[in-house]
Image 1 (spheres, rainbow, N blue to C red):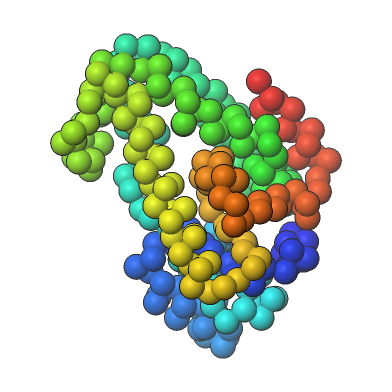
Image 2 (cartoon, rainbow, N blue to C red):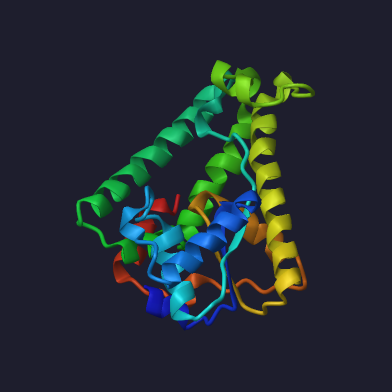
Length: 239
């Protein structure tokens, strides 16, 4: 996979790490290059940050990696009551029924990580997850967030009559901030080819934002990653 993605020849790699973590990220990467940091000893050593980000950056002889995330409390379970909540709960259940077995298959070595990540970047899969978080919740009205969410979210100005739309807004605002981080990091570096490595739930909205910016062209990883198994599995998300 790293070899396939290396063919894109990115001049900058952006990771799902907060901007405030940049110094630590840079230190960790330099330690890794110097043989002073073992990925296997890291708490999340199997994550894409290390397995793709660090190793690919080393292959490409990049001097650093870029932290581009903006953290916000946005759990899928925050929305749990309201008129028409059953529409969102059914969609969320459908998401879990489709994704969890795939994650389990990867953990059991029944599905390769290459196939899984290629599947997560298929258009059908992106549309499926994007719809569940950025469309379906709008059905829900006259409800509320759960108690734990209300402790984490600034509820001032939240219109609970439109609680589903407010829920979508939380996710969208986080991704707008991530988008801003991406734009400004690219401007600062001047890189012409940028690889953004983020969780799959961010892909749909970030693609929409970047597609409407005339200064950028989206290059699908599927131009470089090819998997018959991923294409076969993607048909189950075309609904």
